[in-house]
Image (cartoon, rainbow, N blue to C red; front, side):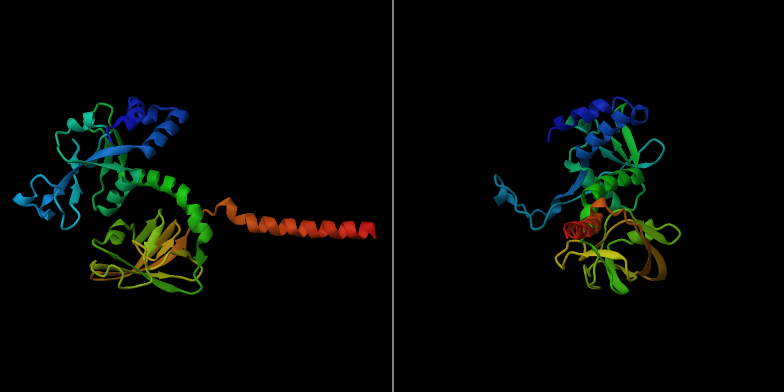
Length: 285
């Protein structure tokens, strides 16, 4: 990617999004959603098994190369995740390693980090645009939910009885992201029926989910767990014992798509058809 695909976004950034009219803001968000940015990273080259014999050939990694995003600091001491629309802007940052990322990958990085950082596009430019971590995640979740929430809701089923699910983490993010002991997920939430799922992760969240809460079982080969809960779902922390956190689901807000009501429309139509046939039969007799 050379950044040409972000040319319209860069043009729109010449004006502050807050000063745009409704049409301009919609176009800006549409361009932002499909943009691919350059993200500066630290790359761990030690995993490469590279010797003199490998000169002139592609190195053969023993394991995937790992990287960590570069977190910068604003003039007011705020942590920021710098993103660049093109290499011309990236070169101003005076850093050599970049990877290409879209909004979904950026959101995944923000979810996994403990820092409350802002996302800033072209931070070295006079027309830099910044979004808070929460605002960016809300933006991404709104677009992702429009794409997949309907599918999850239509295919999900209510629990027949109170059940326990499990979520293991490398860091206690559920605990850290909770407010007054309540964790709220605005994105589809993954967990597993199996308590040994990703058992190498040191922090265990035990989720007590009551009868009636909707979930979608996706099978034991799921990357993040075998079950998905449609958002918005909330858990209250009821017990904390070392690295083990016990939560109880206290609510699930569902924006049921209108398509779910088609079965009732067909029932009503069938009733009217039967009534019409009866009337026609009586009239003919």
